[in-house]
Length: 486
Image (cartoon, rainbow, N blue to C red; front, side, top):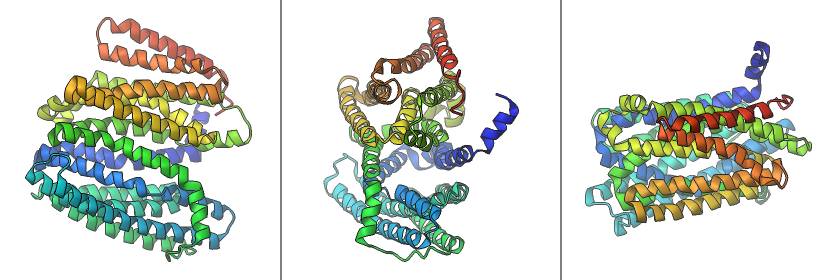
C-alpha cells in the first residue's frame, strides 16, 4: 500500500465519517470511564452502583423511541437530494413532534416505575438506597427524554451529510453534561443533585440546538406536525429498526437488573465498570467500520460480489481486535491498576478480563450484522438479536445457580460463544459461500485460539498463539489477493 493510496483513503467521505462517528461515540463513555474512580471515591460504590442501575432502568424506557433518528436521516437525505424543501420540512416537523411525544411518554413511564419501585421494592434495596433511586429515576427520565429529542435534532445534520457538525455539537453537549456532573460531585453533592443539574443542562442544550438548526437551515420551521400519511411513511421505514432497538435495550441492560437483584448495588458498581470498558472497546470497532452497511447495500442493489469485502473487513476487525485486546489483557496490571487504583482494581479486574474476552468474541458479529442489513436481511438480524437475548438470559440464570454472582458474568460470555458462530455460519450459508456454512469457522477459530493463548499466558500458550497467527496469516494471504473492493 503506497503513500498516495493511503492519502486517497484518508480523504474519502467514508473515512471522515468513520472518524467523526468514533469520536462522538467514544467521548461520553471515555469521560465516564476516566472519572469512574473519582465518582466511586466521592459518592461511594453503593450510590455509584445505584447510578448505573438507574441508567439501565431509564435506558430500558428507550424501547419507545420508535426509531425516529434513523427515519430522520433517511428522509431528510431523500428529500434533500430531490431539492424538495416542502416535504423535507414536513418530515422534520413530524419527527420533531413525535420526539416531543416520546419525551412526555418517557417522563410518565419513569415516574410510574419510580412509584412502583418505592411501593413494592422488587429489587431488594434498603431504605436509603430506595429513596435515592426513587428520585434519580424521576429526574433521569427527564434527562433521557431530552437526550432522545437531541438525537432527532442531530439526525437532521446527518441527513444533510454534515456528520462533522453533528459530531461537534454532540461532543460539546456530552462534555458539558459530564463536566457539570464532576463539578457537582467535587463540591460535595450526591446522586439526586447530579440528576437535577443534568436535567437543566440537557434542556438548555436542546433549546440551543433547535435555534441553531433553524438559523442554519432556513427551510426547517420546527412547527410540530402530525399527519396520518407522514406517520405511515416514517413508520414504514423505522418499524424493524424499532424492534431491533427494543431488543438492543433489553439485551444491554437486563443483565444489570439481574445483578442488582441477586448481588446488590456494590457488586453492580464493579460489574458496570467492567461492562462499560468492554462495551466501549467494542464500540470503537463498530463505529470505525460503520460505512460497510451502505457499501454492501450498494453492491447488493447492483448484484455485485461481496465475498472479498466480507473477508477483508472481518480480517481488519480481527487484526485490530488482536492488537487492542491483546494489549489490554497482557498489560492489564499496569493499565488498569494505574488508572483505577489498587482497591477498585482488586475488586473489578476479574470482571474486566471477562468482559474484554466477551467484547473480543462479539467483535466477530460486527461485519455479519452490517452485511445482513446491507443485503436486505434485517429480519434475520433481528432474529439473531432475539436468539442472543434468550441465550444470555438463560445462561446467566444457569450461571448464577452453579457459580453464584460470578456465574452471571460467565453465563453472558457463554451465550456469545454459542450465538456468534451460529450467526457467522448463517452469513456464509446465505450470502458468502452459498450453502457452505462451515467456512465461517475459519474466521472464528483463530480468534478463539488467540483468546485461549492470552488467557493461559504461559509457555503452553506459545504454540496456541502461533497457530492462531498462522491461521490468520493464511486468511490474510487469501483475502488480499484481490484489491478491487477497495
